[in-house]
Length: 183
Image (cartoon, rainbow, N blue to C red):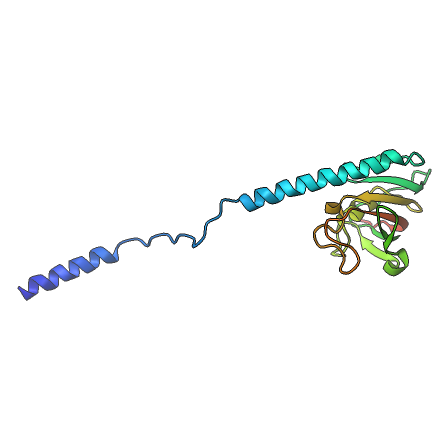
């Protein structure tokens, strides 16, 4: 009898030990609504900023504004009439730039930023995406003023104690040199 109980116990243990583990369920599940709400908020913010900037452009009849496929607007202060090349991937360039509110109030001057050295699309330099994209449109000696919506500028982070979150800005950039790197 004891022998039968031992065999039965071993069979029971082997049957329960072969059971595959149950998948753990998350303690808290989300429906993804935060991401959807955030995307909707950002779309509305971009529409508001875009409308504001296009209205600003419409009021300014003294300049010829161009629209970039990268989501910003710009005009030339100084345009190069020669056919010099634009910066390409890996080129080493030097430039100066400032950051201003759209009303012209300076946030960071070109003197504060100093002369910038940058390798096109190969540098981890802390530049806003709008300036990185804008530099590719320029030629040596040109000065261009860009109008950036907040997502192409400093976005949610802003500049500590200088620029709030989600603020569109303008930046005047002067491309000084392009050093083309040979392959």
